[in-house]
Length: 623
Image 1 (spheres, rainbow, N blue to C red):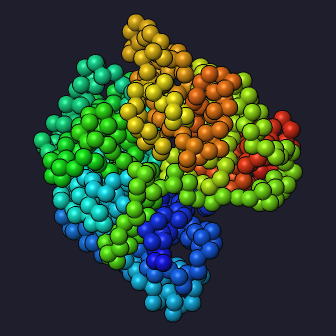
Image 2: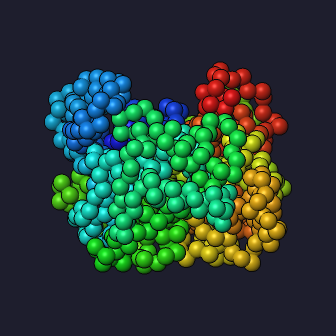
Image 3: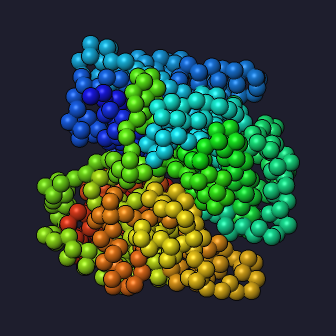
């Protein structure tokens, strides 16, 4: 049996994954263990977990695959600094020592970092492969997908040189057909707007996407913003290829994303501070860049169709996490079907690197896939904890709990609590792989309560009140609530809420202030209906998550509604909880009402006062 360890590290979202004969066994992000959001360090804890859980000795590992080519990336950095010289001297002086000392000798660094797992001679003999960054993304999207042949579209910030690639996958082969190179990057363009609107690059892009629907598509300001972006910032060609006007950007060699004075002159709008007021102009600007991004993605998809003549499309790269664009792409029906890697960002590159090594470098066949399901196993690929471990953690805090012997009894109690407007931390089985909580590390609420979104944002997540929440809906009830033509198990598609469930808009609705619009009752499931009557849908299947499905089913039997509000189990700035200890701490630090870990049930009112050992609000930037 061929076992391959995949690694991504040293930029953001470090992760590790292990495959055996092409089958995904385990995968995890380093941040989940270190509790540092977007941790970029070598994923030593993730590897430690993978080897322990899979009961694989490092001696059994045939190869290690790293998700990009360091020499090519170093070449790009040198050529970029040379091209833009004398600009970027400060950035050059800060970046080069790290590269010269460590990153350029990546093979040595990887071997040294793996030294705790095996004898030096074993590690020295282990083969290390370096597939290109966008090939790793492409492999992560194509090989686990349900398709034996598909067009592949990968879009992100930057790998080595490529920022966008169209490829064609057939059986075990992937052929790159077209690329767009740095500094021209759709991902970095979107991140520049994220930065300008006052959010953090590499994590705030979700916020920008969530803010966009508050923009007024009919206003002259929005139309002017779109026109200005297309006239001055990006030249979009008919085939979706594009180039950026680097006069406006500073990310190539500077320490900021954009040239502020040029942007302020172009948009007549100052850069928003991180906690500054979000006025209508920032909402319109967020909508403008979302519209432009969707235009590029749709044109690139059309070109991918023309180049491959395929009926199917798979996607990866950070831009593939833009679920609004994904929903529009599905609606356009350019392809018969699309599939998106649930860990589409750099963390997923670790899995893609391992798969590329196995299928391309080693020329191994793909796994037979007869039932048309993907091979991601619901993306539940991380750590799990048995009853002994759960009780050990809970007793450490003196927690008061009840253990249910029968799961159906537990779901009956919990669904009743949710139906009364309570918020429940729900911790089950194996941790999700990727940025979405899919019912194993989730905070759950009742979608019918008009104030549930406000409660979750301000009292549980401690984040901006405008942020939308996603529904988890029974797979078989999908069409009762959403105009969605396919299942969405990974919460990567935005869909309109059914017209029959909506309430009428008041006059001049688009002119209302942000929070007046937000708290307008838009449907009979208001907590998951975004300002534009859309929702980021997760369909829940008995096949992949029977326990979560049973909970929603029990809730439906009580209320007649087959969906719940589902948000990730964490507060702003914190990674999704990994262990029972993480879950209990998050439960006690927030205004959650109940916590469920496996079959263990905890009520907040019964818990002893938590004696915090850390300034957690400062650690997670909540002050």
